[in-house]
Image 1: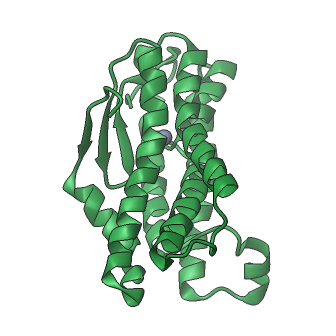
Image 2: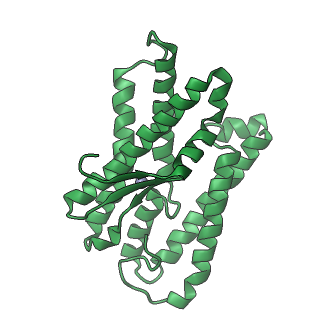
Image 3: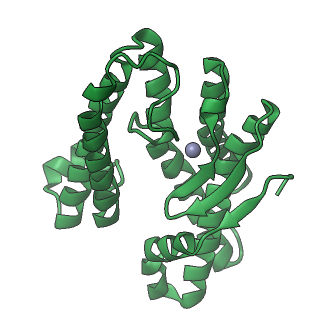
Length: 234
Ligand SMILES: [Zn+2]
């Protein structure tokens, strides 16, 4: 696609189908529409990263696995501003598509029910996937950005700060997903109901909490690591 190799792994289809499963209630074709819209949305995001990386002379490849994914060594870019550009380009592409779609189409007005549904999924996934991705949770895009900024401000403790902030946000999102899936109180909903959360997101952010905790445990042995590049690669 645009000269960039794209590989879609079975895990991607499985995860997209699980996320779209409730669509079966209104018809099997809606499940397929939802999976197709998730594919388009994640591709737009990853293409944002990949095209920017190619612009800077890298040779990126898109591999869609369970939660999106780009096979790319951004660490191959020596300049921090270039790495920041590549990281920001993903959410920028997704939010750009969201803006474009919401300007062109008015949900609910298309003559065909299926088109309305497709538009609704595209708008929802493009907005929330990219906003969630911008949370300072490592290794999401927002976490990569905070890692760049923290290690820039303090090369010796930057990674520790990044992971500490990441743990707090991932922990909140995990507990939030759990609370919403168990049925939150009206008071909780009025404060935090606008943040999407589900059993699925609780598991996803719970895994990130574990990953971040393990990374923090590994850090002391690497104290003094003052290179720009993160020790565990990307
Ligand atoms: Zn991304």
